[in-house]
Length: 242
Image (cartoon, rainbow, N blue to C red; front, side, top):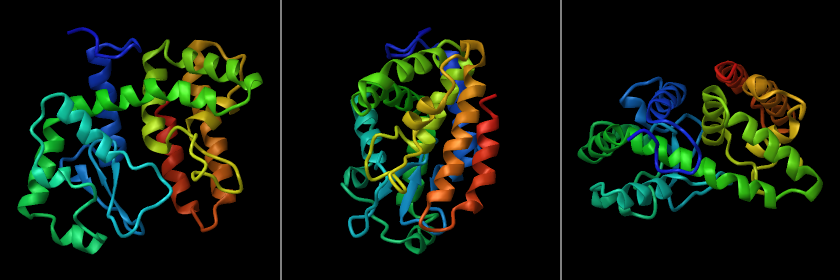
């Protein structure tokens, strides 16, 4: 198979390389990193994309993507452990999650995630494909052509496709009202809006990275708590788009 099942043109070799890069970005390229719960957070981060899975007691403003991934895996014929069909993450706190690091359930979950890395890459691609209509409908008519133009410039190169797939997985689409500080978002939509519309497609991934850096600096400035500790890591990640 030369192309993945998506209307966005991407070769299987491109998808493999992009999936590996996202895995490195999110998990350090390790199997253990496929099941994570970061300090200071109240949700599990799973798979190459650190897809969010909330416990039923505490949910948050960020989009919960792990249940959607599970449904996608099932649609592709993957046998998913029964406990993962649970609507909510079975571990309530990070402490519970860490204690269960070598439990049968965690090992089963980790094995599932390791064995489905190509499908997780497809899932991210499909999320990207579905994002453009959502972004366009969320903004004024006068800004739509700019966003669409910048999006399609990026899809014309392998580096641009990687930037889009990584960023939507990294910071989301930018369409949720709950993902705002002082009314300003930090998702892919906001980055596409911030890009120079006159950029040529061959330079689009670098321009996307520069625009993303401005958007994320603005996020840190607007944040209700100090997020500056994350900024250097975010900037290093954006450099991989150049």
